[in-house]
Length: 207
Image 1 (cartoon, rainbow, N blue to C red):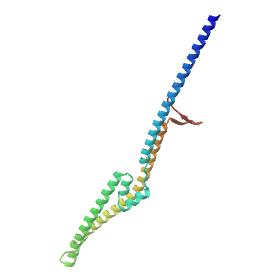
Image 2: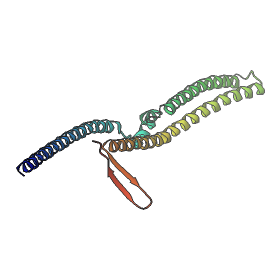
Image 3: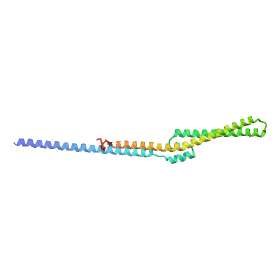
């Protein structure tokens, strides 16, 4: 009986030792899991902070009214300010071409009109020649007027397009900011979803 009791006691001591070792192992695993979890959380927080700073730097909205004012003073400036570089370049080229065309047409008109006046005051030319000279000068006057109105039309287009481009640029910037925020939320392990009957919020964490 003593031998059986001794064996039972040894068995109980061995089982108790195994239980203690198992408990210590579980505690150690929990400790390392928590340590890894906190380390990952800290890393995610640092990355999120850096991305947030970058996002704040990228989210730079432009003023539509400011864009219009810029284009009012310098055609195309508001479009460049709004990020519409292609249309801004076309505006600058169009305004420049209109100004040059109007100046050349004005110079030609002055010369032709001077010839017309000389023909009228000299009295040595026929009425047909005088009228032909007048018509030629009048064509140059109409050409100058065409270039002037073309330049005004391009200027008005620049005002409207600057306002529209500024709003479009702001909308695009906000969409990119929202997409970046969604990626940041995903990196934090937060899942948001919806079904026809419910809206759910979940936290996904990998140990």
